Length: 339
Image: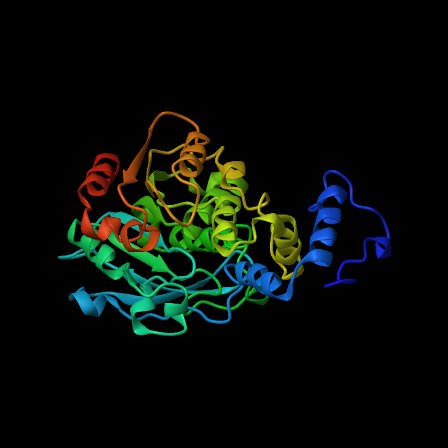
């Protein structure tokens, strides 16, 4: 793998504040020179977490659970990317309470269809059902606005298909809130956020950049927000390539993405000040829990927050399906703050 990184060919050497400082770039070059083709393929497999060749589909709609009066909606993200979604009124008729709901990577507003086979089963071969979660919310008297993030579901392709783990997708969160604020009925409703994983960190970045836009948000359900350095640490150990994290950062940049430290959620929590409830998987095999999630949670300011530990090691099966199976704590939280 020689001659893949030519530091001498740079016009100016990177500084300590560069996206990849000189020391880390030199380590990446050394790793590139030493790595085997087999291990390099594993590193590129880790890059594919952020840049996939497939996307999730809408394998369910609100019709699957007998929800009525719902409609397809669409609006632009803050940078113009077309975003597709659903508006689902509360059971029995539209209420004055709105949940803005988004999803995790690599899912869609409907969830994830790994049970339907390849290519999705190559990621994980189980179903994540977000539509039943919307059913629970609408049955409890909440209207739901759910949407696909860019490069997911039926929303537009952008940034050459790269996920920024919030660094790009925050624009979708801003677009959703501007859509609500401009709507003749939705703009008059009490608003809460229910944003998971990728959607959660994207919302944190949106709050960091445009806090004024979210001043009227009553509360925030923010489960499973990822720390990508710890996720990549866990997977690199699983794949047997933990010595190549600097090379992984380099390849993420070369794919048009962001370094692990740029995607650190703790950098974007200062405006997450509304009441918040989060859950994380206690022994999450996909990351370094409990320390990773606890560190993220501790970075959120204030005391009006709660962290629920899901007693499992399966992030997908038990983490993303937690609310659909045991909604009582979250509904009590919403009812308390949305009165």
